[in-house]
Image 1: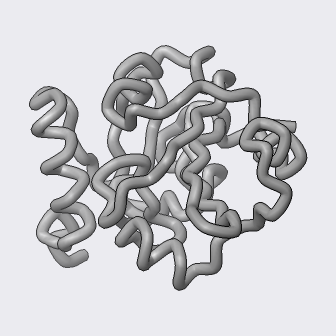
Image 2: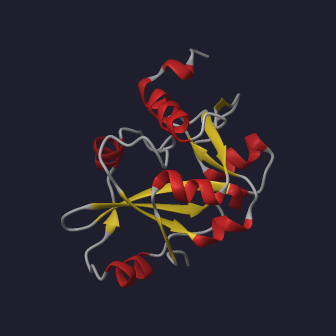
Length: 160
């Protein structure tokens, strides 16, 4: 496997982590963490401890939702929370343009463009949570409090 830590998207995550807390590190997995189930299997942890980074498009902006791997983001709850009627999943192209990451490696940090971020409170039930780090084989471990701080996200009830 080529040196994934040298890939530009992964370097952005490494830089964001280093600027926040130098003890947080990107780890390379031998197997894919493209989906929450894959990641949990690779890390030998509960699916709920995996952070899914989901980008949604509104009529004039984008919204990144960080959701526990065993939950589904609710469009109805997003619409109620934001008071915006027109919300849909962002296209893979939009995800790449807005975050700089491809689907399967979308990190909650180090985006190309500033994102409004909502965080699902159910992630709080785990001591350690794992998030993508710019590539399907790269992750980082963090706790809920630090995820909230590093992303400057807002806790919202956004899951079904």
